[in-house]
Length: 268
Ligand code: ATP
Ligand code: TZP
Ligand code: MG
Ligand code: MG
Image (cartoon, rainbow, N blue to C red; front, side, top):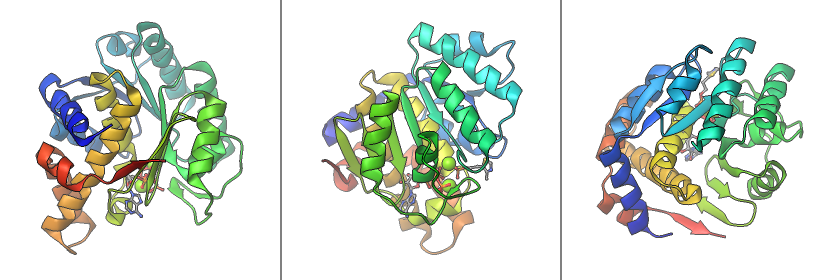
């Protein structure tokens, strides 16, 4: 895939304003909705089991996020996910905090067993714990443990039969056969809560307009990292608060030219 193709997908998100149905956590709900709006997509948050099947039926992508889960919410996620599968709507899953508690790990694994996931996105510890490897995780943040993220992602993609994205200093995207590395981004993203969750929803928006989900996810990762770099250029070292606001601005401002100039990705 090349920068022109990436730019076209971004343009289509902005033209088509795909409705993205999010069943997400209470920490990041507002940030996620504003980030999707800034990008040019349409967010909707709907959790009730009485309405999730109807809502996913009018949406272009479904994003599931277990950041502040409970049993009722997990039931809604499974119902929405199964409906999305029947309708051919992509399902993007963020197993926030998998491994931090046994409940989280079990519920993440249950969702993956019940719903066909199109793209699984998490930090390295979350993806490892979903696979049953007990990596150290500090709440919802990747712990200090280091491993080979490329190997881990390929392993996960093969075992779970889905596209896997592991984010960090470099992002890994793999089908198990084809693997890309994206190095756009900035470490201040880790100092603003919800930047991982919003990225998962941004992948949903791109998947809502582009059937090739590897191209959709790769474009989303590159675009997102460039938005962070442009935000830093504006706010310098003013700190995470200013960065958060400018990052939201930049989601609306990244252009095709920026993608051609700044994209930093490679196929392995
Ligand atoms: P965590 O809770 O461990 O921070 P997360 O779910 O918030 O995980 P991240 O891995 O932080 O997700 O990814 C969110 C965004 O931040 C991605 O675009 C990723 O590329 C970027 N990112 C994360 N760490 C770094 C880093 N050290 N340098 C540059 N970009 C980073
Ligand atoms: N606690 C439960 S969910 C959540 C926190 C702090 C937000 C996590 O967001 P992200 O995108 O993984 O940093
Ligand atoms: Mg984070
Ligand atoms: Mg996260």
